[in-house]
Length: 206
Image (cartoon, rainbow, N blue to C red; front, side, top):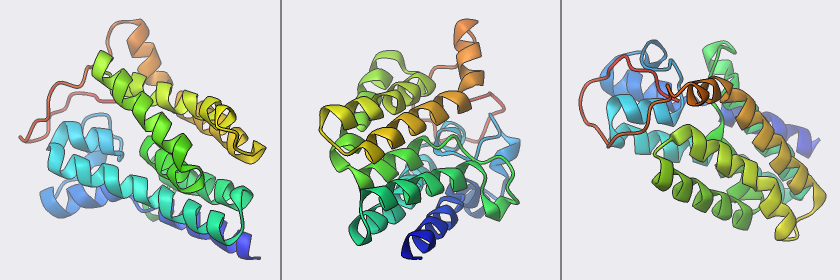
């Protein structure tokens, strides 16, 4: 029963669409009508600058971290994995937006791993930073970091639920970035260029 409650709490936490709420509160706009139409932190950062972008990153990470950590401490790694996966599902299909399209789960997945297996989450975050610094593609960094989760979990000796969760998260992030992959193949993907402060543009973002 406790595990089921933690899973439900994870989904509700994941459904907290911070990118949408922040833009609505501070800009009076619907981020779903701008850029890529995504409510995740990358689209918010591209369109509205680093202040709202950083806030969205931290809050999207926290909503994966909190339920995963609580479930891991209260029950164990298996429950932590399920609560973290539920948070990711909530971010992708948030109940507060009527189950419409949410974000691509990258920050929420990272937060979930920081809660379940901090060393794995930290290693994947390092992968994201290195790849992003080299390519300036947020999509490539996200796919690379998520794809490394299962490898790090295995190398660091975590139990099989954590390794399986890493594989699931990596595959989920890859599937949700398939439009980005098509743009990369055709040389049409936008690099992340600076940390703008101005008004939103209509350019697509990952």
